[in-house]
Amino acid sequence: MKFVSYVHEGRERYGLVAGEGVIDIHALLGSRYPDLKSLIAGDALSQAAQAAQAREPDHRLSDLRLLPVIPNPGKIWCAGLNYGEHVRETGREVSEKPVYFLRFADSQVGHLSPILRPPESTRLDFEGEIAVVIGRPGRRIAEADAWTHIAGYACYNDATIRDWQLHTSQWGPGKNFFATGGFGPWLVSADEIEPDAELTIVTRLNGQEVQRATTRMLIHSIPRLIAYASTVAPLQAGDVIVTGTPGGVGAKRTPPLWMKDGDVVEVEVEGIGTLRNPVKDEVL
Image (tube, rainbow, N blue to C red; front, side, top):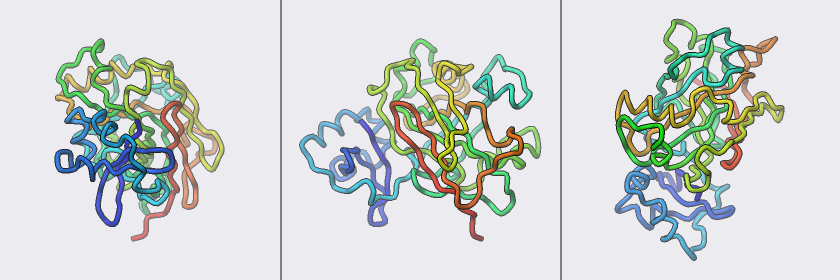
């Protein structure tokens, strides 16, 4: 199952992808579940699929403005330095524990919406990643149980304003500029992907491959990331864990490769789909 959050006639809604169309689940279940996060919290993804059976799509997917998969997550945990090649290109050492930073919800955009390059910097970098969306809440989740807490997966571009990231030892500013992170195109439900399946992730800039890796290369596995974050604070339905980027980021190339106005960046994850975002200069 593939679920999207979107805007139609000025109203935020969510639906189930059916071929090239979308079935408006909000119209069917919105009185009980007003958004995709609440549908997940109600353990109602399968209920939504059943309600949509034999229905024709209400919209063409291409006619909709897609939102970040979960527009209103309570928490966005982002893992850094979680692929060996990326650790080596940054000159750092592998950490015993996951490296985490947080993102704000309004730093994200949906599939096909522009990633904005702010006027304060030209050092806008790409970071293709896999996002995990929590379904079943929990605190101090054991690694052995972590897969059962996942609602689904999406593609993510943890695009970064590099100089602002490195102003101090705290990465938050460079990771949270408005409308810089792509999250989409949809949520693929966990039943579509086997636990611990090896997934390939590829990032392309203007059609040229710039990153490639598989989830076997993760330093800290998805269950370990979930266990660690849930020790700090309870994970709730709709919370997002972004699992880290492979090597090949623009900042570590010679010369550096920064994204600019007019570029198109794609993050493709096997079994999930392709997140595509144009890059635009932010207009003041």
